[in-house]
Image (cartoon, rainbow, N blue to C red; front, top):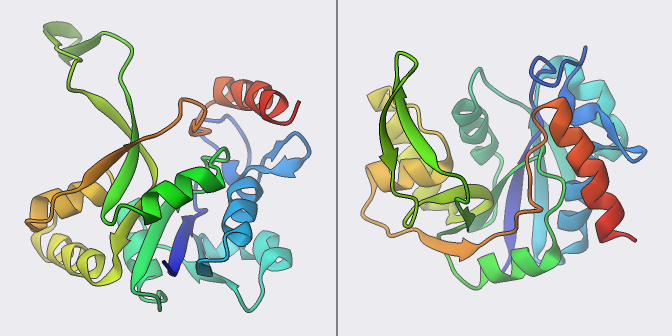
Length: 218
């Protein structure tokens, strides 16, 4: 199944305590975003890779651009960036992936393509507390809780529609699946992700990422 991918590469270095976009930090000698970029480049079903980032970071991405890989300026929020990226999507199907998640694999892409309108997720392992004003309100049963990941795979027309509805309603979702849940009747399928598919957010994540890469490529 042919598709385009929106690869989100905007970001700051604040929580990473870095002086630049965390996506551009090196993990074992390569920029964080480049790992997932290479996976999509290796998938022959992936027709177009749309990097969505900050205009000031464009020079850093120039060496990776080609007829297949293009750069688009993003918006103020992640949701705005996806919507702007969708304007460049030409395929009937689209994946959305956070460039800060470097450890996806081709097998995961194949599973998503086999199940339209689906996302990756893993069971929550920690005990989850609902908190207000620094005080625990309740312990949330975790048996039905899953931690959502990317890539997320949807029909382009569906994603365009729910993003437009969200824009009109002033609704800000936490991921693309949340918009499909809020503004359509389409059921989103959930596929087993990987605990290795971590998002590089803090310095601790970078240390974990180094360990994961060494394990994957040992």
